[in-house]
Amino acid sequence: MISRAYLLYRTATSVVVLCGVSLLTFGLTFLTPGDPARTILRQQYGQTPSPEVVDAFREEHGLDEPVVVQYADWLTGVLQGDLGSSYGSGRPVTELLVESLPPTLELAAAAMSVALVVAVPAGVLSAVRQGEWVDGLSQLGSLIGVSMPNFWLGYLLIIVFSLQLSLFPVAGDGGLSHLVLPAVALGTGMTAIITRLIRMSLLEVLDEPYVEMARSKGLSERIVVYKHALRNALIPVVTIVGLQFGYVLSGAVVVEIVFQRPGIGVLLVDAVFARDYPVVQGAVLLVAVLFVITNALVDLTYQYLDPRIQLGGSQS
Amino acid sequence: MTIAESTRSDAIQRRLRSGIEIVTGTLRRNPLTLLGAVIVCFLGVLAVVGPVVSPYDPAAQNLANRLRPPSLAHPLGTDRFGRDLLTRIVYGARFSLGIGLAVTAIRVVVGTAIGLMSGYAGGWVDEALMRLVDIQLAFPGLVLALVVAGILGPSLRNLLIALAVVGWSTYARVVRGSVLSIKERRYVDAARLIGTPRRRLFRRHLLPNVISPVIVIATLNLGTVVLATAGLSFIGLGAQPPTPEWGTMLAGGRQHMRQAWWIVNAPGAAIMLTVLGFNLLGDGLRDMLDPRQQTRIEVV
Picture 1 (spheres, rainbow over the protein chains, first blue to last red):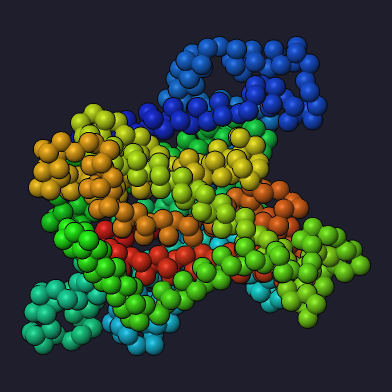
Picture 2 (tube, rainbow over the protein chains, first blue to last red; picture 1 turned 30 degrees about the horizontal axis):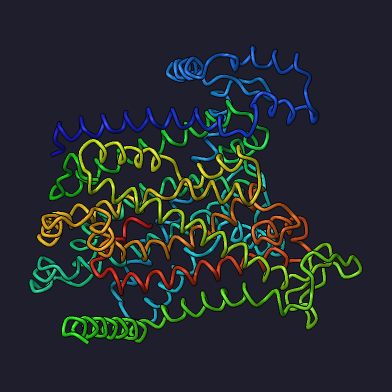
């Protein structure tokens, strides 16, 4: 069982981390070289703004207040679900995020599915046939998969499947046909990592005495592998799949740009280029919060799946 | 030569010999590591020598010669300004390897220093530094680097800063873990008791014991940094055209995918080859230096 003390500790550290995250997210703005208000306005109008315009902008967005007050205001807003509004379109940031999140989650889920559907059989086959050509092939495939930049893979897929074979649309947003290529581009790196992990983990488990025991009872190899070994071998996979969530989000940013798919990635990159700070802060905060929550959940699931694991307080 | 000196040089020779044996043994068992080393050396030589022997100028435009497919004169074809792609790829190796090395070096130094401090000092220093690490690990690295680079303003220098700032926490964690287990050993206590200065204690007794996992992570990290540099430049946040940087070149090939497939594929393949080289080498080094696979989960 998960101890209450651990649950409490995990929640407490998560809260500390989230406070730090909010501070860092807010502080990003101050990395702007020179004066933010002037830089933003120059970006928007394409010329140096007059002092009156700058002052008006500062007052409108509270940039004339002391930093501490600005942070307090921002944080109060965040806790009430108000992330301010975009400098560009004037729309509330929360609205933009709510609009952009579903396509990104859809892409992430599709990529994860691609990865698991390919990686589990490939990893198992690789481990069971260790040293044979199937194993070599799958290991070579994984090596290439991890090393492949997903934006290049995206273009390769477009060239082959959209331009040459006309099987899928080149870019944009729409039904399932628009999801296939981006999901493959994003999922390939993950497939490679998970395949290697399942192979390694299964090989370790297959050496354990209880597997030997199952074998000597006369159970068929199929039952030994799938019923006895694989279950335990999948435990570390859960962690990695969870930790890969951050990788998926990072990758989604690039893949969304390759396929011109709306989502958090495109929203964030556009906002970064336009110096639309409220949107940047909102998107970064959302990504970090999602990431922190997933990691905490992964920790807890891990312990639930394998009661032998004791997660101590100060272990990190 | 005194006796002490001769035993010392004997010991050094013995260590050297066993080191060489480990390396050759691993290479024989795992030829892929050798392949990785060959790729990395090849790219290194290419980056240094390539620009000197290349007959073309990476920036010289020749509009009469634009979008030419691969041929003898232009083995990888030409881009939309008629520039020779192979030449640009070769020059690009300088940027990718240079940034990769610089960023990784900064990460290693900062991360190791913080890890040593955190593990050795313990108490509130440790707690504070580790929460700092947690906060950094709360962001997907690439997203944070993207925002930092974007806000600082798109340029290769700012990209380098952004990538260096966000990636040191892995090293800090691993080093701290090693220090925690080492600092309780007898020989460290002994060194402390005879009054070894702290600086010497760190350099002679702690650092050598934490260096193996750091080397492994750094090698694998080089691949990741090359990938991130290319990715962020591809988005437009790193090198700006006409810099012959691989990610930037790939982004520039987008409009011509239909008639000139080689423009996106040449830099793409170059990035993949580089990352593959570092990954193969890193995997091999891990088998060699870290048989207990402590670094396994950290890097993935």
